[in-house]
Length: 232
Image (tube, rainbow, N blue to C red; front, side):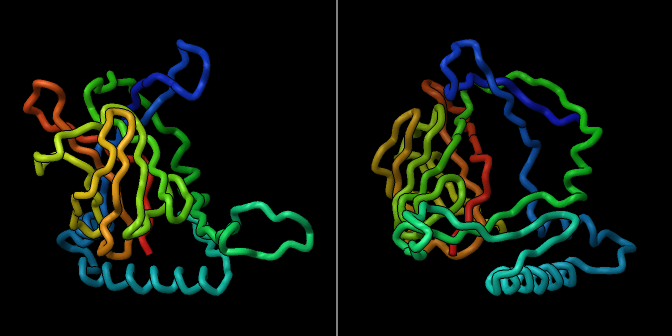
């Protein structure tokens, strides 16, 4: 199946005719859904066994990272990095200016999967919300983290929604299924949403989805941020 993409205006360059390609993913697939496909009739493992192994593997990877090790596999490489500027060779780590960050890069097997891919250009949905970047104020990161109880700024296009309609808004979708609708919205503009992250948001990985109805339209459209954000 070809990888679908559309062209959207590139606002990061001065040239008025510049466009950038954006992949149109068919769906977001969870670990549970993939294990459900693996544990088909005749398989030697069940979905429950697969989930149990995944949990053990996840805990082992986290433990290695917390021990300061790099985890290398054919699918991905997990390492640690530092952000922030050190004023001199004698400067020390200061949590107010420097932060440790977990970094994930594709491994050799995923890199090989890039070879031979075919693409198909499709028309961009001109009325679909298009979130581009989420800035988490507490951690001072972009498209990386969500800090429960803190504030976040989401920028993009066609983000404005009707707050009195419970089907519209900013939704935080956990990797294991549940979704949380953001209720504290300070700024609601087409190009910017400023909102409070729910204080009780459980730890995990989240997708950020904006759902909105166009002007004089009853059709609910959604757009997803192209990054998985971590809590905890």
